[in-house]
Image (cartoon, rainbow, N blue to C red; front, side):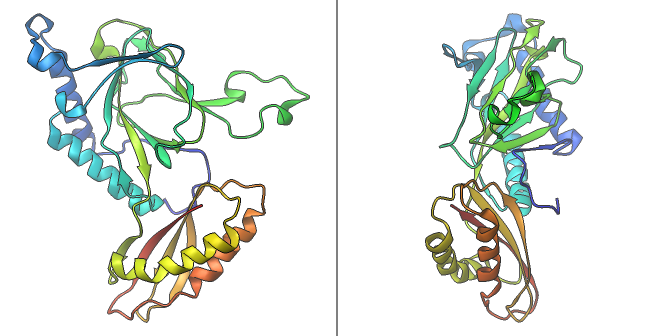
Length: 296
């Protein structure tokens, strides 16, 4: 990903190598195989999470169904991808959730859980159920922008199908839901997803400079920016610095921009670029790329 992400959600198909996703799915299928032989120690692991008007589905810690090393490999891949492409490198350990017919999530947000929510689908593409799409409301003013025209369905929201090996990330503040599942009661035909949250973990650096060296030089400028232009601004802005061997910032570009404010956000972006462009880093034998999160 080379462009700045300003949209409220991102979809990455074929997120991990196909064989890696298939191996995780094989563990799920093996868990439900031979239902007449299930025993308490291995199968009384699902929490039926029902909150009236909000949630109805089954969830568990994924290592109770999928080999732990495989879950660890997924989390590591997500942490690496998010750190490189978005500058957010803190990834929560996922839940594994199962939706069978009748299961759904009502509209809600996760504003206090992270910066981005993630949903990784291990759902069969050829399943004998329908529904289970992730519903993401549009973040415009749905009333004032449609006073003179009728709108319904996907005029107001987007639906993301739980395709196998598909990663979906979205702004945790966006109202979202999961469409009700219908069809076969066989659990292997249900909606299986790993899901959690992503947030900042400080600077992400690649090259000659250490993370600590970059973090030390940007901490005070970030505090200055919060005080000077951050009032009334909410949300993440992540910028990528290309630092040359002499320690000068030779290029700066935004990676993730989900700031919200009634103020002029272009002036905030300009101030961030100008201030961080003046930071001087230690001279090193090679160049460094550093992703710097600013959370307003």
